[in-house]
Image (tube, rainbow, N blue to C red; front, side, top):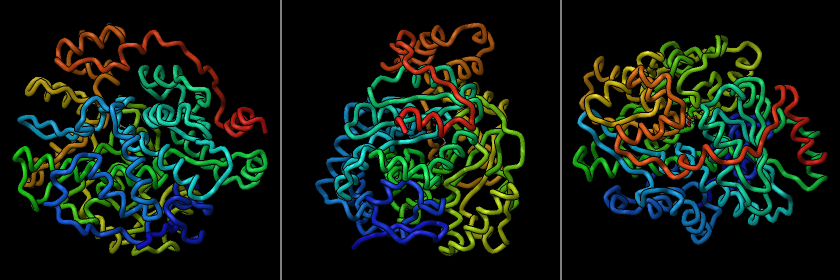
Length: 495
Ligand SMILES: *Cc1c(COP(=O)(O)O)cnc(C)c1O
């Protein structure tokens, strides 16, 4: 059976998965959603012994129905290989306090690799299927991790160019160094004088600029997005919730069929939305704990039913979650509204013109599987320190936000169901904030000294990519104003 994709705002005809992957965002500014979320046909029992790659096929085949089995398996084999430093790809590590699904074993040390290692393969296959003879230009805004993961995924992929915009002063030193040293003759990295939301809005504006798109088409270029609004990123993320669940069973934390909760450090709402899709497919997930940092728009949203972006943007130690407009929430709104694009469009227009929108009570009711929480900077630091003291397990600041919200939820709810905490980055990617939080004495040390020290105290080996990073040559130096982003793209492409 073929599954088609619709725009959440109803302004575009339904299209196949491959077309939705290429297009990235719908022409009316909406996001692509499957016409229905497929229900798993196989029993969980039959899936539980599969390798990551095998399981990935069994899940993704429901969504990418216009890919042949061979095509999809090839994409999976290309993506989940020795680029990851463990054959498990996404291992669950259980401590005496909690279980962590570590999604940071890919080349850029953050969970974005889970989807961005496969997206280039999906996109190339999709372009062939749709018989498009244009060069695909990947345009991406990043809060730090997407950019590098996308660069790594698309570097030197024939028939593509990748342009990444990042907030100049809004990413960690390691994140920045990772991006500006990116190799590959088709990679472009540009800092902007603004925050992530500015970068994301700038990219969205370029995407919906029809005149500009036509100019580029004439030149032989086709835009696509590697941001988490692309359905080709969302779907691969569903897989690891199943995989994590099965490991929880193997480790004796759960019995097959029993529910687990998940705690997800959230920014653009992509990762937690994938958990929601997994639940809808039939994975026994109970509560979805949506964890925010001081940019707690989502916490307020789940509390009050009001989404209000009119507030100060905070720069925190979990920069990949410093976001006030969580794009993927639009997909959840679509589903809870009973697939009502008119309603979604109204909310999104209100968000654009007034900076906020409000759900009615009936809609709010439908969010009761979610629990919104947030961690202040202090609480985040304390939880890194505390968990390390008790278990010797080092969390990065994003994961710590998830852990902190899980602890808060646990103490108010006494929910007996085991929780899987989604660990989204390696502590090595945020060495400074992690080490400072553990012990104040480290605040004087520089980032690269701290890396060695982190290895000493955590007994977790420094990842290979980090070892060479300091010496890598800086290849990208362009910085531009927010309103110059389109110009920068035009220049790169010679339009
Ligand atoms: C991107 C990112 C997040 C937020 O994930 P979303 O899917 O945008 O909600 C959390 N932690 C890290 C380390 C990230 O890179």
